[in-house]
Amino acid sequence: MDDDPPAAESKLTRSKQRWASEQKFLTDAPGGPARDRLPPGQHLVRNWPVLDLGRQPDVSTERWRLNVHGLVSRPLTLDWSAFQELPQSTIRSDIHCVTSWSRYHNEWAGVSTRSLLDLVQPRDEARAVMLHGYDGYTTNLTLADFASSDAMIAHSWQGRPLTREHGGPARLIIPHLYFWKSAKWINAVAFLGADRPGFWEMNGYHMRGDPWRQERYS
Image (cartoon, rainbow, N blue to C red; front, side):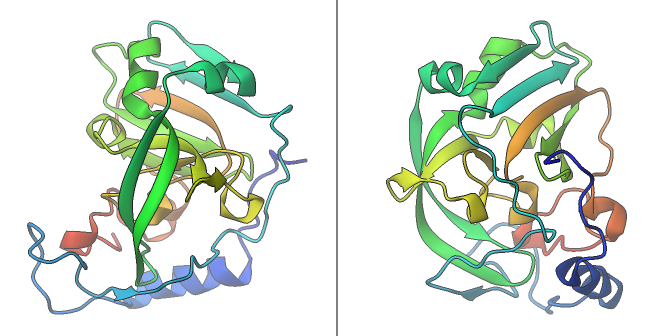
């Protein structure tokens, strides 16, 4: 089943757990505000590397659902048709992976998280969200990061539908944080009263993941 727990013992998972324990990819470059386009410890790539937990769920648009629940005034579940009827946006952003690669000039199309927030109206006590994917993956964000101006639930990249290997039919995009925060195959957003760790955050990775501050590990 596509909502089974992730394969925690995949080769990539074991490697990333080891990188966290070894503090791999950290450099002596100072953190803080970005002075250049490329964050410290990163290198540019032209391709788009594929990273996952060893599972790539096959989710058709007919079966896809996005459930938004928790500390919101108007919980909802969107099917693909309702998702497409929401206001659509396009953004261009760079992306930065914790494994040290970055890619420039990515064009996304989808629904901004701010449009979603307008619909569900988070309650005053909401402070964070937990993202859930069809592969069983979870990752956390503060509400402020989820509501950033360039954050969206994307269905297209470079003018074409997102492929399965890159999280299609829809994935989260949070460009200002390391890309493990941009959950693939997204199917739920839970609004929480306090921030709590998701999958990688429980396995040695940072709770926030700012690439300019090299927030790779806890």
